Length: 219
Image 1 (cartoon, rainbow, N blue to C red):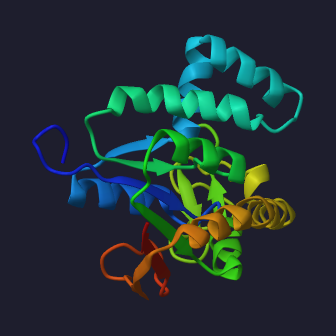
Image 2: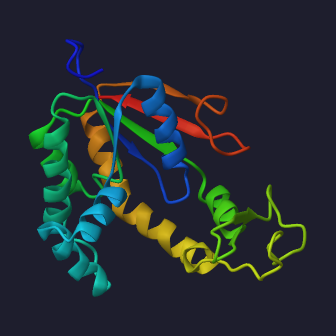
């Protein structure tokens, strides 16, 4: 898809932290030839480059505050102007109803993908993850454990668990996602014309070993 005369597809993918959005997105964009725009990657890139909006966003992050809707909206919409002739998949934006409303004023969203993964599955996956800090090697006690618990296979050095992967932090992040994003899903459901798919796409998309529910709505 793109400037070849075919209709452009504008899609949004949603799912809690650890639901596998990155893995699923990579498979979707490869299969359907979409451009992938991750708000997290975009934010980091702008902060690293010291752009005006990147500096502004960093001031909120450094204060431990959420980035305001208008800042995230400016960031996303500015980048989408560069994809005017492309089909795209948005990942991580919109996260609030005001962001969704601003996006709808600029573009017609055709499809919303909701990765509906049980929170207990996510908690088990994330809290089982341990990292060797100097190399970045990742282990999972469930399906990719080190030979010796808590020890890196290659160096023999201790493994650590990231703060984001600790059970109490994971629970807090999942609750925050649910509180913030549930209204966005309800917003899109209100615009829903037809739910065309609700099925288990384990073989095609699911990054887990257990089934995952995948909802695709055409708006």
